[in-house]
Image (cartoon, rainbow, N blue to C red):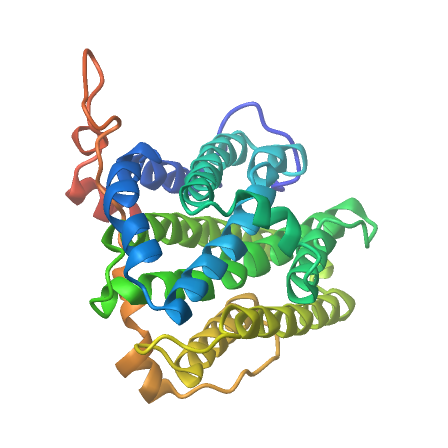
Length: 330
């Protein structure tokens, strides 16, 4: 049995992948969950109380995140055409729904901060163009046979899009509230989004490992070198993007080394996860003391299906208990 061979029903060999659909249902939320408080509290705080350095930092962070979120809405829903397993199609559909929620959330933030027109303008800035180029390249056709092309696509999307291209922005945005600098609802929105992106990443890793185990010949030296080169280009692009975000200076609660250390940790982690021989220098002790708070904060959210449940709709917690959730991942 191969994951590339179409199955009409969920094959027991891949049934464990269903857990990612269950965890996403557990954390289901909509943009409305955060919009009211963002509009009433966070946006006025940004516009009227933040110093100019912090204001530019958070605006650019939101712009950079919004551009990515808007471009990744369809990847998981289309993946079933490459991996024709029922469970992949179902989880992919759930993931795509969450990406739509993320995109709509950032669209709201852009509108609230009067940044909608800026999204188009920043795409021509060299650092943003570099990010767009490497994000688009992961979909380009590089290899035959088809299975090798699919593996390449999943590896690069999982690593570059779901993990490293957004997490530095999550870190920056969440750091304000973490350091008592306001933006509590934006922190919560970012935390919900980042948690879901982390589960997308974990699902992608499982698919990658399954493909590698079943088709060891696909993960050859040529593909490893291609991925390695792509990761290095992504690192260069992300580093330049962060320079752009902080071109007016760093807010008082952040510094260059802290942000760089977090980025390098993330790149090291993904290289380890997909078995790529690259080493990005970071300080482990500093990470544990100053950076680790964000990854520790990413826990599944527990909102109701709707802010005010009516009729026959029930909260997700009533469907999956915390004990059942632990069993899913044990």
